[in-house]
Image (spheres, rainbow, N blue to C red):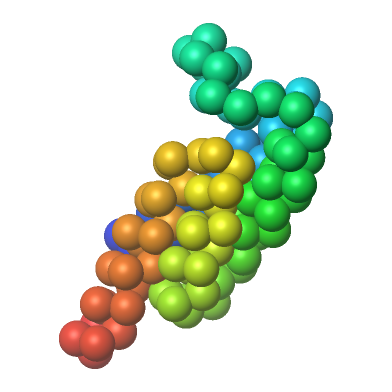
Amino acid sequence: MGVGSYLGYIGGALAVVSGAVSVITQKPLITHLTGISLIEGSILLVTGVIAIIGGLIALYFSYRGNGLYVIVGGILGLIAPCALSALAIIGGYLMLREGARGG
């Protein structure tokens, strides 16, 4: 298990947490952490659910070792809005690079 898998796990977990916060409070996680209000309201219910699904995809395919789907999960996690789910995108890319090298 390489660095890409670990980054996929971290990015996926952060996307799930951020999506859950968005669904429960209808405020993005960044608002709770910094006080900066980006968006609020019922749209976060939908984006939070999409981010939770994306985070779960990133977590599962990090375990399975499929970097392409980890990237897709990371992109869906960005919808929360959760910038730290970009770690899953980076991890998926590294997983693809490791697979191309044969390692």
